[in-house]
Amino acid sequence: MLPVALDTAVQVTPFRRLGLTLAAVSVLLGSLAVGPGPAVAHASPGEGDHLTVTVKGAGRGLDGTFEVYCRPDRGSHPDAPGACRAVDRNTRWGKDAFAPVPDGSMCTMQYGGPATARVTGRWAGRSVDATYDRRDGCEIERWDRFVPLLPDAGPAVAR
Image (tube, rainbow, N blue to C red; front, side, top):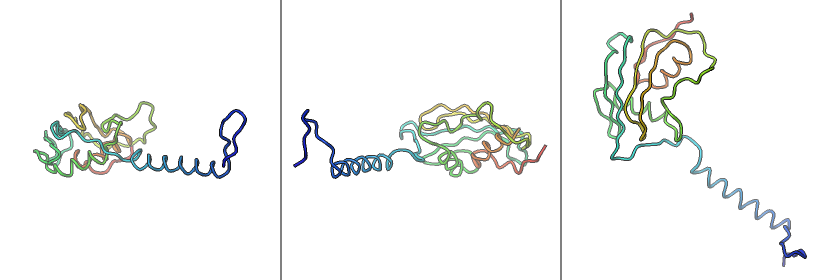
């Protein structure tokens, strides 16, 4: 029998403390199994994911406007399955996969060429209207995360 204090509150014995700790750890581990991590958000089947990609200045036959539909992967994009995988791997629940580089970011002074791109449409139930260029290291990295949705524009050069 557990000791009881005069105010009828149950005292925590070492065994009870161990049981409560194990219960708390169990709840915590259970929530981590379905909690944070690279949970990918997808639109409901009726909505569909559709992006329009317009590329300019990339040269080598990479310029143009391309349509991408995902699940099932199709469209006029030269690599629709690869484009869908690129966006999937950059999608995290609660985060804007297409967000611009944050203001005040420290970026290397590189020039990735004159290529620009605009991506519009719907992804994971959200409207998309994002622009891309290769003017510095941060923008180059942001572009390269989405290859092959955006074309591989080649290596950057130091300024």
